Image (cartoon, rainbow over all chains, first blue to last red; front, side, top):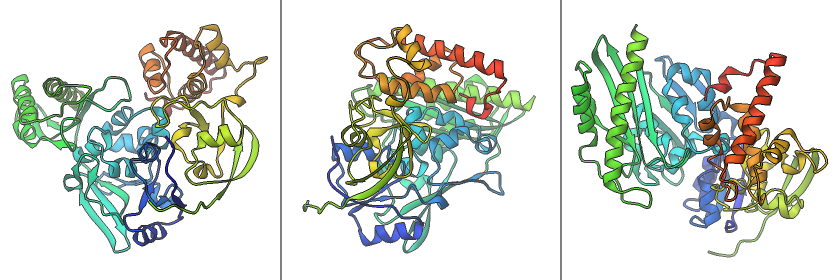
Length: 291
Length: 178
């Protein structure tokens, strides 16, 4: 349970970091908070020739408001910052709520958003969050910057479109007018990876759904948006019958994996419960805000 | 894999108030550095992949899994291990609460538990038993069944709240939104 030997560099700038990646194509691994790569190194499931420590690149550690009311978040932002930032809570109140479900305090103190996204665990909260918020992920290499939508970013479990020489530098979270939101997760213990989880953003005008987003995690190889559920809600008066149709649409065609923790049937059942709770909670919040 | 020539990196850190300057191999974990290089064996090593919580210590005032941190990355950091908390003659208030409420038996998980509790006490209200159990969920204990630990944290929450009311410190609401 000790890492195999590797070389180590600790660049001060993004430029220097991407040059190191380019010069050690396929041999280098980026380490930010070390909370995903750390265990993989200890288990020796990865044996990089070089670890590029990006944790001292201060230009990657920021949270800024965008003109459209959204956020621009540096890749080195720690989970704990997203959990506690007032600016984040004002723009997207769902984010602090989701962040409290990310692992344990000691992990949130160190783990970064760039790291969590690059690691791309299908049962991790950050990947689902960026799907829910229609985020864009900005990566840099020596060739320049590339922007990938969250929709295209995740390829499969622990797999993204990132090339070996690319470093995630920030995520752009476009503003979305919403007055209701909710996040529901079920895990065996607090802090464990979710068996299933759901996030909902909602814009309710009167009783009518003007805009809605539904995302799920833990039930597929990547985090999922449920556009059929969104379509079932959009433009409708948010009655219990409409919610039930959306719950059905959200769970239609889900193919969760069988693993040690839960059967596919159980995960599907759990997902329906969580989606229902989420939409109802988002409705409650929106009605309360609209009062 | 070709054999690598080992390059040592200098590190400077403040450990329990004492300056430490050493050279380390990049792959050396902070937990091993503390135990083997500095002889601070109060930091325990359990799972070595960040799950059991036994190796939790304080780095720059935050709880951190020392098995998930390379020693080389602690360069410039201020580190506190259980050795800085109290001693047999004078336990820290948190340790005293663990003793009083039987929050330990074999003691293997205790150093990590103490670091986790200390950090949680400074960051969260912990106003319900459920929330206390939530923050403890990242630290495994195979002796106590957790009840004694939960009770110890309750004692500390009460003491902290009394202190805060008395001095009207008005704990940072932003940090207290759990």
